[in-house]
Image (cartoon, one colour):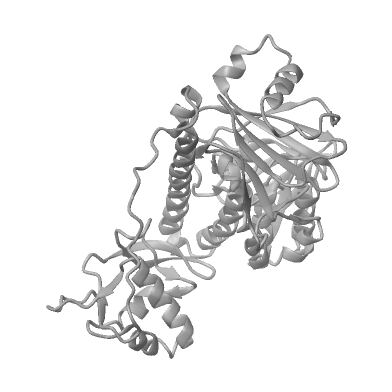
Length: 473
């Protein structure tokens, strides 16, 4: 049996796996990817939210992915809260893509960065060793023994490593099929039905993908109905295909689990989970690919810390665990709010259950119009807390701000560490003086922008008549 070694073994070559592997190679590690299927492969998740391209740019992968055929989205047809409408995006920040080409481009970029790939390959057995893992890998009919210091599970919902998944929403199944023909829609569409919701995506070079999201119990109740017939019946209730009656399905429809969850065991002493292996978002957000890439980039810093700064291992693991849990909760609340919007127009358990737990309407942060020369002070509601944060290459414990105007404590804003900046803010200064006090670190315009952001969220407020004690980190 051939013996192979690596610093890091990544299981799965989707966006999370390829981006994580690329970043680890850029950090100087010997990285190997194990991927069970050949590329290109068709995969759901063809809609890319606006944050995807900037994230890929930060990983040095924008050019190769643009070449994979991204199609910018200028508008989305909606019928969600009472009537048809068109949501315009003049900046075309979102995109749709052929996931086969997209995933292959990211994997090629990983290879160009020095990552080794075993494909098609699968892990037959694994065992912990004193210095990492011993994996038995089947690749193209031959077995090899891979010794690695660290394993990254990027295998998606399949889950290559044991875990403790906690659902964050009702069991949801996506029934989907690809169409071809004349007059297919050229823009994405989202629509709320009576007991389901619909999503349509034009895929460059392939056709039009239509998805119906139904409750898992409902699908079990329909077991006597052929899936093809059920799919056509459900699509017929929507407006997705109204203008293209002559279209035909490229292949029989299939189902996919779309239930959101997070994994309590997303990190350990010698393993980490990124992408859908760590958390799956409600498909309503269309942010699965973006979140996968975010967890991959952050996860690489976490693993770099574990392997090179073991004294900070506890903080690194806490950061990853907390960030996965917090992201899951934020997206759950967001999805529940949007389901509640549709629930106001559609009765039934499908909408009621999914809108459960929607946060109450909260007043938006007061936009205090402070002039550049008006005295200000730090809010007395500001608190400093020490939490693990992402640095350039390592997880570090930083003094972070906690305030009712923030969703979570923050240590950085626009790449600038806040603690040393706010030490220079004294009661009675003006926003202009604050920005000038920061001028040794940044431009005046940048300083005014950061001060404005802090004012908008109430972290900096109008100077009170009686000065209050200043907060010190």
